[in-house]
Amino acid sequence: MTTSRISTFNTYYSVTQKHQDHSSPYCTLQWRRGQLLVKSPGNLKQPYLAVLDQEQSLVKCLKHSPINLVRIDPKLGEEKLRLWANACDKTNKPIFLHIPSANKLPKPSSSLLWWLKRCTHSIAALVLLLLMSPVMLGLVLLIRIYSPDSVFSREWHIGERGKLFEVIKFRTTKETEKTLNREEDQSITVLGRWMRKFGLDSLPQLFNVIRGEMGLVGHRCYTLKDAANSTRNDNFMAGRGELSPASS
Image 1: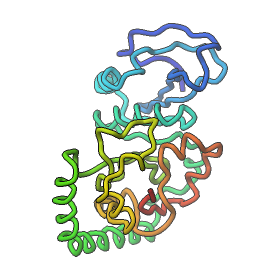
Image 2: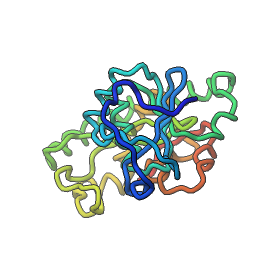
Image 3: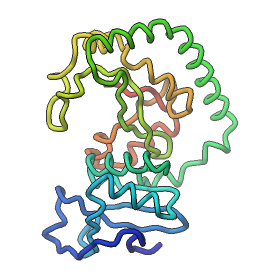
Image 4: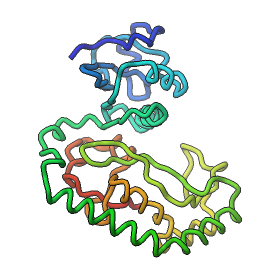
């Protein structure tokens, strides 16, 4: 595997150690056979790619690159993880956390029991979705009354073998007041507080279960914040494929 820059990234310059701190957006790119590895630079002097700092330019670069899969180091931090996840989502490129131990696990496709479990969860989620559809429709109408913002909120979580996916939930906060450095509870709506109390905001996650991204029971899915704050990446593979709706 070689360390270099994608051909479409034209603006870069060398950085010294003083730029390579925890607040720096700097990262090192490596790729092989269509897979791009985005990782922290460590103590090495590497090219800095200015176009990686903005989502719009990153989307443009990924769209015109031959890369078909991205793996990213959780040590880069929550903000960088979210930036790359959003860009990959807009370019239809799957993105995974770079977890070395994940490569040692048996592939899910080799297990008949795993497929049976997945099918069972999907069918059960579909039945629950049909049963709860009147309640969900009523919540949609109430949310529209309480807030002019979008009905659903999405948050990146970590699935099997480190794959990132967006968890779907009913919006419980005022979107216009929610900021990155502000406590979410300060902008929660009255309806949102009630939905959280009874777990109704998580009902849309049934769509995630139907799509096979998570399960009805098992270990909780980790968030990007969990990944960025964790010092042991092996913690993310503790479930070994057993996923469940993430708790708030």
